[in-house]
Image 1: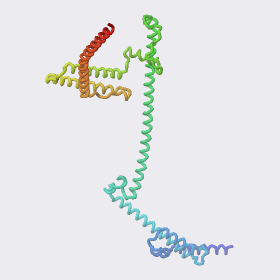
Image 2: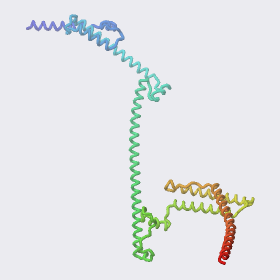
Image 3: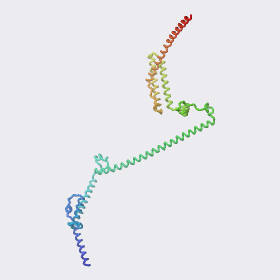
Length: 360
């Protein structure tokens, strides 16, 4: 037992010595590490890993390969760690240099930066592109929120308008109902007092306003009652006034022309020109009334056109000439009638004399 213990102890010590000796091996420089890994300086980290994996398959003691050697594998492992450490230091130093350069670079974007990305962001083009994409996302989100806000505000506004309209309509209905009740109460009160007993048409049906079978007689009776009491639409009254006014102006023009007579002396022509000027002013006023009528008439086909003063004056002249011709013709007719009467009297006298001679 003691011998076995001593042998195992010595074997362990021998293995530890070999491990310490192998682990204490380090390549002289980084070039030796690349040479051991069979690589060139400046290669990528993927190449380093692939090379270490292939060499481990060849020299690892547990790989079962013919070339397996623990010492060589320890060298390869140490070279692999050295290369990775050097590569990480280079990357870190490169990042530090870039950070230093970014610190010393001006944060203010150059003028040509404003030609792209809407002038958003600063730094390299790739950094500005990322900043611009984030800016677009934020702006789109703000626009969506603003649209939803406006939509909700419009909905609330429409609801408020509808509520206000309903309130006005309900007030209008209440007022109408109150007026109807008041009128009915006044009618009943008057009937109770006997104010309607002295009416000539009491107890008799209302006369029909029109004989047309296609019109409701009740509607026309109501219209007749309203018209008789002066409740006519404004546009109907205005239309009636316009027609009466133009007829009156036409009659006055014809009367003035008749009064001047023929022939037209310079004095009469001067009077006629003054009358025409006054007539033109009256036509202008009438056309203004027509404008007012066209604004309030409910039917487009009922609108009226302006009157032309020149046409109305020419019409008055033509009417006067026609009347003068008729008067001249009427003056000639009595003379012709007298001649016909004389001829008829002579014929009758001759006929009677012939009959008397025949009887004798």
